[in-house]
Image (cartoon, rainbow, N blue to C red):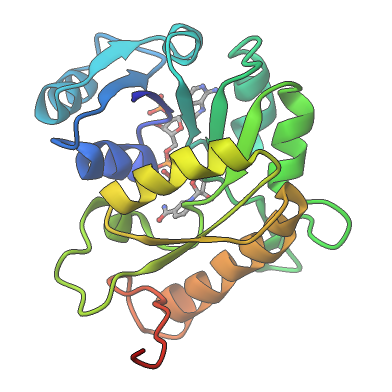
Length: 212
Ligand SMILES: NC(=O)c1ccc[n+]([C@@H]2O[C@H](COP(=O)([O-])OP(=O)(O)OC[C@H]3O[C@@H](n4cnc5c(N)ncnc54)[C@H](OP(=O)(O)O)[C@@H]3O)[C@@H](O)[C@H]2O)c1
């Protein structure tokens, strides 16, 4: 698949590395295509560099891996993404009363906000629930890590499930896009354990069932 990754920080670079060698054509959407570290990343993962809007326009799947406070302006600048699958990895984080928190949740979600910025796009919320390291490489884990998806377009979720398997995850369909209201708090569960409770970053939730 033709995949554009918009944002090449922790998450964007991890996904690019995780997808290397999986048969996809990856374009990194970056603001400075001449930056040496981005040229090195592109060489490492066999991707090309384009500005974010060009990258998004040439892709079938657009991965959004941007800081939430920059997202609205940056996403709207990508142009009309009607018909394209858009993976929203972002968590709408904010400092509230001195604590890292979700800026929304009961009546909307970050993913629903993204959908409102990109009418016509097929938005799928996923890859927001674990740290970037697990997205890049999880082969050493004893169980495949679970990764939930929420979206209104069934065909889009089926395509995203293929990508999630390529990244080593067991995908689970959480339902409609508004179920992102469940998945964004799930990220906070991971963040709480990883960063505040001392568990560290190299772990993920997995689903285990009785043998059949
Ligand atoms: N870090 C994690 O483990 C993790 C896990 C799950 C979900 N998330 C979520 O994923 C998102 C990205 O997190 P991150 O840790 O990868 O952030 P990050 O390391 O700070 O990377 C952010 C990226 O966004 C780019 N960017 C910023 N403003 C932009 C703009 N206006 N146009 C285009 N690109 C822009 C930055 O480019 P420049 O280099 O040019 O500044 C950088 O490549 C966040 O919403 C976060 O909540 C993070």
